[in-house]
Length: 175
Ligand SMILES: Nc1ncnc2c1ncn2[C@@H]1O[C@H](COP(=O)(O)OP(=O)(O)OP(=O)(O)O)[C@@H](O)[C@H]1O
Ligand SMILES: Nc1nc2c(c(=O)[nH]1)N[C@H]1C(S)=C(S)[C@@H](COP(=O)(O)O)O[C@H]1N2
Image (cartoon, rainbow, N blue to C red; front, side, top):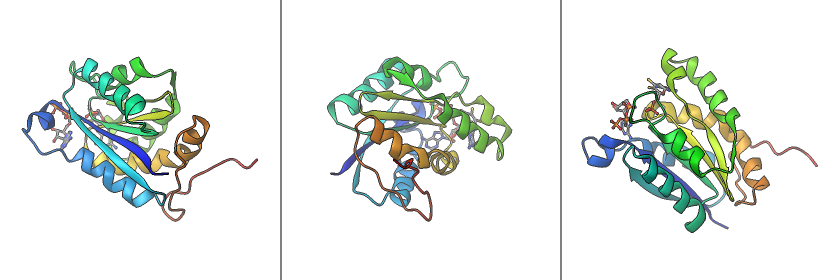
């Protein structure tokens, strides 16, 4: 079964065409590196508007059947940054460990990593994971948390994901 993976860029300026979106393509590139099982990206580009972000996540999970959704952008402290709130609004359960680990790895590179409120949560059979907006943060954050993602998606009844063990070994507890 081909896994559907939502890739959502949340950015006023990228969605207005002020600059080219580099975040969405960066997420797709890392998925291409990590995943060895069949997958297909469902791409969205939206402004920093909480209702629009929530609706986009809801559609990707409920209508498009995505097992996994990554967002990039809108996790900081600025007034327009609302991605974590928009994520929490549509999730049944939050998984704060994802944000904790990504911030820890990012802090080794940049002190402003503590400004990201990135989190993760479950909606139905979809795991939603927030990434910061800086395109250079994406690979580091995805590689940090990906080992736990296939098992999490198994537990919620999503698609089976297989990873390249030399780059990112998926951990599925024995038994
Ligand atoms: N999707 C993106 N594509 C390319 N560059 C980005 C993207 N998102 C952020 N950046 C870069 O990271 C910088 C800092 O990110 P910042 O959080 O201010 O962006 P943002 O949330 O997308 O802002 P805005 O919503 O106003 O466009 C931006 O000035 C831009 O250079
Ligand atoms: N790995 C990594 N994490 C990072 C950064 C970065 O450059 N690299 N930038 C930080 C900064 S400056 C901000 S403001 C927050 C939130 O960014 P966002 O609003 O674009 O999501 O992410 C932080 N996390």
